Image 1: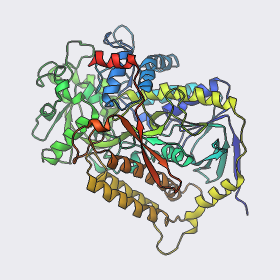
Image 2 (image 1 turned 30 degrees about the vertical axis):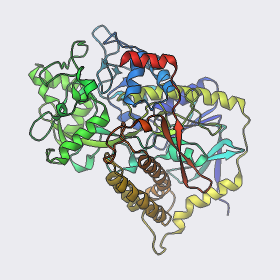
Image 3 (image 1 turned 90 degrees about the vertical axis):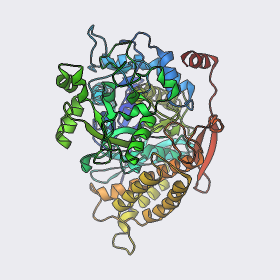
Image 4 (image 1 turned 90 degrees about the horizontal axis):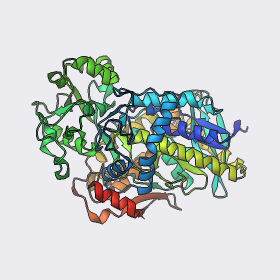
Length: 607
């Protein structure tokens, strides 16, 4: 008996309803295109809501010396110059307009005394640049985009997971999916698809990422023939919760440090002053008593070492923990309560500026951050790598397949600056939606290959057929083994020997994944969902490991204990991953896009 499959037609299909997906859907719909928006969870529960600190845009509201040229230079420097310079330029130039647009759509930002959008300091940014809503900026972004988007005629398909991209004649023609509630299959016919599914954090044990982040978009694009790039660059945010164990890894926003929070070891020593890069010392206070102002807008204050780039701060924390100077539960202390020495109304100030952090620690850890330090440690947070796209259109090398946000590579290079992610979603989400709609109008819809759909149905239901067979595996057990291995062998500090062990371990896990069985029926079956996600997790984990093993240097978020320094040899190309004809991963060196004379001039001026 043939399995029933629902057919749904759109001009543009957007996979993922976070900031990038919503912005892409809004832009595509504004052109008159029929837009479908698929989200793995419920609308409004995208992981973007967990982005707390703010969105980076050179509005110049707090420090008028800021402009797009400074922002461009900061982004390139933070990315160790492995960024696509054109993407960095587009981002720096267009971010202010996207933030102002968001405000016009109803976003309620914190304000300066004269009523402009307030901006705060953040790691790697020369001037206060992050427009914010307390420490709930991502939530406000999603609320605003969602409220605006629901009036644009977008069809929303909630609790729906895409299993495979469908192609015909070398270009996209649709996507095969299932609804998570009832387990019924769907085929979305569309000549243009935008992938905006976020990151890969669930490939690691300790992560700030929500359950949806299983590398779906990267793996879907890879299997469809797109190239992945920069997958070795996985950002470990310096500060995630470490206690209690049930919340280990949950993000503690960089906004805590932006508002004056300092890092201390178990002896109360502010250890970040032990390792300050030479090129940073001129803009940093010599000790914790000098030059630092928690009052936004003080142009004479110098930025503290806690606001160095995330990779550097994370490694300093790991150093303290490994040396036995960590906190009781295996982290270090992040202290914002000390500002009571400088502010009479410090508790009220902290609650106003960091309301989510106050409630998060109060409710989950029984700790009052206005009087006590937090225990924090590094957590897998963001992947700079993703689908290699055209910087202007955001289209991959597969005709009709676009990507934006964390699913796409190019903007951030070797390391992302905090706050650049939210403005990235807006800038390139808009571009992806605009060009996807334009592409769709120029193309005729292609027929979907029915035999391909039937094969996908069969493959998707295979785990049920293994129920009760000898040697069957549990999907949750295989997933946990993968996360444990990646955390241990391909984490913050990497070595050749450990990553080679990971490569062998991935081969074993792939064989185990083929034996995963599922009990019960298709209606909201978490075991089945996890079984189907394993292929995506294994794909992105292998891509990260292969690229990290290949790059024999330390740069940005990629740190090799056996190659601890940056090397000029590795500074002229990115690493690409594509699917070979034999189904194996094929590694290549992608030459860096050339900088224009203007780009070179800006970087020289800002040095």
